[in-house]
Image (cartoon, rainbow, N blue to C red):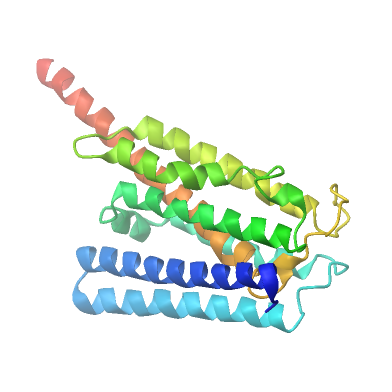
Length: 254
């Protein structure tokens, strides 16, 4: 790991990944205990923990050994690592088992966790100061994803404080968060030394192929969009429940 400002950013990012990993495992474990018997919940927790550690270990090893740094490969090897998280997001959106677990997850919790994106933006800014990433990938340039992190606690509180279920506002916040995430992902791709590159100021975006920043595109970003997917799924179910409840007086009157 580097020294100086870039090194500080690296250690901060490792701490963030560790904290997020613990929070994810604890959250899944709590939901499993509420919905399943103790042996099933324990097996689920161990499976999630093993899968997460295996994925983090695999991506870290590939980055540390330089296997991902060849942007001349077709397709670039980093892009191949982005496919499993996308598949996971699709599964989370469709799985009946995940739907059952969501019944035990506070709606505000999925939104509160998005505040981690403030730390991500600080890390990117420190990397920019250290000459490791181009300015357009920071909030000084074209990356406004920090707004999602800053507004996450406010959205979680005001949309789901006691007695309130403002699903439309929460849905709008999630869609905006996804748009901001897509914006920085696109900028990052267009700043990398690939044929699609559109930002030619230096440095090129190669830091995401090195340890520990490999965990940005392979863990932190997927976690962010998976949280959005899960939150939207929860809100959609809340909308349907509200519609059904609104129809009850009409049916009774008929």
